[in-house]
Image (cartoon, rainbow, N blue to C red):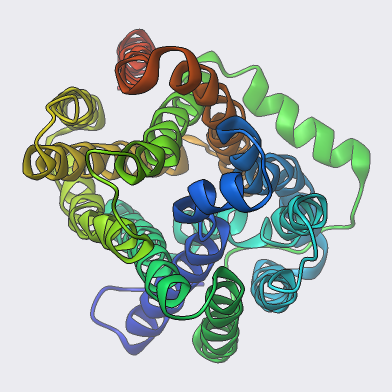
Length: 393
């Protein structure tokens, strides 16, 4: 068995397929984020309640990823990822016809279940199939797909909502994702390093138990909660801030704010490569500093300065995510799919729990409260990074 080597046709196909996988997952998963102020007004719910259209998806996705990892041992990683993308795209289109807020949240809950296959298995696929010396860069390419998907999904949603309606926007995102899902299925190389195993609950629990007892690895896994919790909180509520006076931005303008995700696309590849060269802990710590600085800069009233702050925050976050993902993939010596799933369990629980909790800070302390919460989450990562570095490197 050979690894996928840089420069080969397989490398190009696999990298492109994983990019599409990240693109589709994040385009659909967070497509309602710029629509939260509209949902709050149209359905007469609070900001925290509106955020459930994001949190319900990420919460169920977090739990279902544990199932997806074990299911892949039985039927194969590629098969699970293909089914995940196709079903999620179809459900995303159906979601556009939700008659009320409750049905919308329920649809988003089921969407989280179907979307679990890609994020839990893409990281494991990279760790198993690509040559170890280039894992950081390839992981960065996958994560750049998530950043561009998140950006494109939000921009298209904003534009189509202003031109037509939020329902048209959601249907269009689902249709585009369905097309990319078919391409993914056609070009992703079949895994060669993973071995199919019987679907056994006891075996699956034992696989997770190995990682849960590994304290340094768990320190890295918990980072996902802190990073994603801060990231989603900031982006959930900045739409509320900028849709109010004195800004009063339209949905199109709010959607275009997410163009700063392009910095995340660059950061995930660049910082991943730097971590390969300079060490995970050092580059990860720098990425956290950049994210904290960016969050604080958004407190300045000027729109231009806020965008600069958002850009810096996004650059730092995607660097954090890329490095932590690659570090876990390298240090998990066995059951890599389960290790990736545990990281992403905490990652998406951070999105779900912290993203909704941020509504409390928005309601009671407005934007300074949101930023204080985000910064606190990010700073809590430092003792974990230090501990993991001491034990693993």
